[in-house]
Image 1 (cartoon, rainbow, N blue to C red):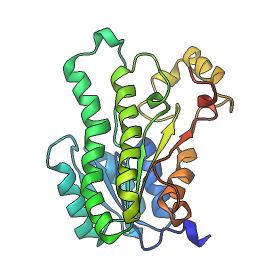
Image 2 (image 1 turned 30 degrees about the vertical axis):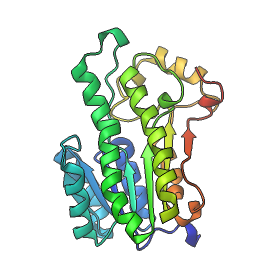
Image 3 (image 1 turned 90 degrees about the horizontal axis):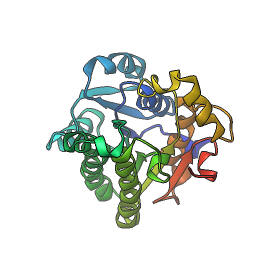
Amino acid sequence: MTRFDLHGKKAIITGAGRGIGKALALGIAEAGAEVAVVSRTASDLQEVVSEIEAKGGVAFEADLTVSDAADRVVKQAVEELGGVHILINNAGMNIRKKAHEVTEEEWDRVVDLNLKAAFFMSQAAGKIMCEQRYGRIVNIASVAGVVALRTGVAYGASKAGLIQMTRVLASEWSKFGVNVNAIAPWYFRTPLTESLLSDEAFVQEVLQRTPSGRIGDVEDLVGPAIFLSSDAASYISGQTISVDGGMSIYGF
């Protein structure tokens, strides 16, 4: 369907070297967009770039927690691709500790990447999108921003902030044709969750709370991301779509 077609669109995807970000980069490129992938680890980008470069993809190594990184990345992407129409804020991290053990440095690391970097990437891209009166911003949040998960206080706080940031930006920018939405995943098999999901007891606990009865696959996120990035979602803004196998029906 043409309304889901991303040909002619230019996209920036952060945290795109592996896991969810890699799947989204490949999926958005497959839907027709030219994609700039961003990661702070250059080696992670090599395989992604080799798969998308035939479609006009480029890669940037950047630590988005550095103060000027967002402006620099967006400027480079615009110069390389010729514009920006889609931004997917996927870069993120978690430090799993009990709340009374979290240090200030650990709190800052999580919040700076998950929330602060996403805001300044949105700000840098949003200025261009508002001026051209078209844009799609998709923030990769988490069900941890809605329900309370154990041993992830900084992560949960950052993702809750990301969901609220999505609403506020939508309230300001939708009138300029810039739609801002979020996707909230549950547990997915990625390099970041590999150790957790190698614990069969933990997996069974997760599955007991998941009506679909399985752990998510990163490909499950590609369709929602393409939808929210496309003209098919032109009247959707400020929303968070849970991609969680039904987990949030019950909460925790």
